[in-house]
Picture 1 (cartoon, rainbow, N blue to C red):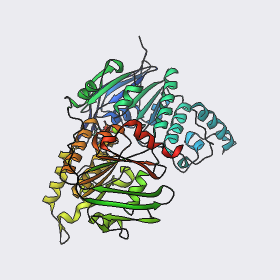
Picture 2: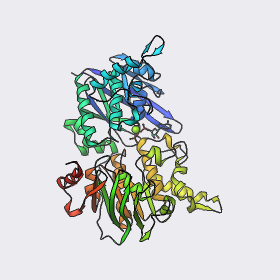
Picture 3: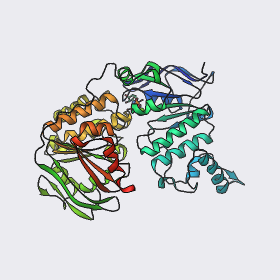
Length: 496
Ligand SMILES: Nc1ncnc2c1ncn2[C@@H]1O[C@H](COP(=O)(O)OP(=O)(O)OP(=O)(O)O)[C@@H](O)[C@H]1O
Ligand SMILES: [Mg+2]
């Protein structure tokens, strides 16, 4: 019989207008990886925030190691051995790695911070997680994957019993994911319990022992991963079976509406050229850092171009500022919703309509009815979970924030839509919804560019695939030529 490490029972938590947790429960054993699954807004992060001392529940009980746990703040949770790696990195970018590990418990001697001692100790923890960096390095110099390893090193130094990871792989490259999984297995062997939140089912099947599913703030059930399959998990999450995951009806594409010729931008974009036609979906695939986001940003004038030309519907727009390019019908949905896509302290309605103000403004007066129409339409068509359009964007769950960014750009009704990782952090049901919307838009003649790191969606949704490696376009494949081997050949083209 496995030993129980954490038991959460009857947990309820209400925010104004939202019952985020409704009689939720969870049991975690020692030395296991427990997947925590559910649709966007199901309450996963909130339940973990309760365990981590970020939120105090309205009711319910928590026990750790068989003893009732009184968790009223983050420090309580830390003292009980709870370590938490949040959906977004929570370290301080402009401090050294060592300072981040010992933040709030700096190593002192004679009333002064003892840097040498701190670096030495930090080095031991970094070695333990197999991270080969100098503890004096400034954190922001590291890749996201390495920053995450620093968070794990920090958690280890805090003597954790359990580690919560909220969508840890959303910004990691494939090799970083591999080393993260290796680390998770090591921690597991040391008896640490791990709660792993993810929307990527392949990962859940690879790394978890059991899976706990939540829906609408409540508990659905817990199952043993080996004895389960994709369809079972999906129907537990969504409450029904999802047929038709990828929707795509292929049409004969029309004329070229977007063309990029010989673009160069710094060291990340090297002499790239491509064309996109009306009604087609073109995928951009490559490793994290291959230059895909930089290329589209350079094309949109968001990054400086050293050379190259951009044509929108035949017109040379190379000299135009980004806003003028947008006005000609090009929309870019960025990958980093927190930094580029959303104003978190403003309402959903504000965020959704900011790109289309001209559609319902007349002589500087806002047409409230039109605005409401756009907002309601966005909320329904993408199934955004919120009490109303007046909710602050920052209060929504991670995946629902992503959906607002998408809704905002769809509202502008572009002819050319560029999506950078559109389904990152989005649950299975909403993914299917986004695929369906993309299909409908393409069928109506929209030209769509989709940057994605997920091979299955690229292969199933695209007419054509452009592969980038080290800043260059290393290959282009037509639908009939899609095959994993071939794609990977181009992905690693520059590394030989
Ligand atoms: N501080 C807050 N104020 C108001 N509502 C909140 C707050 N935090 C969370 N919520 C709401 O609680 C519900 C659960 O959110 P939570 O972040 O736990 O979802 P999640 O399962 O983690 O979703 P995702 O997969 O999108 O990250 C959502 O409806 C969300 O809008
Ligand atoms: Mg979440």
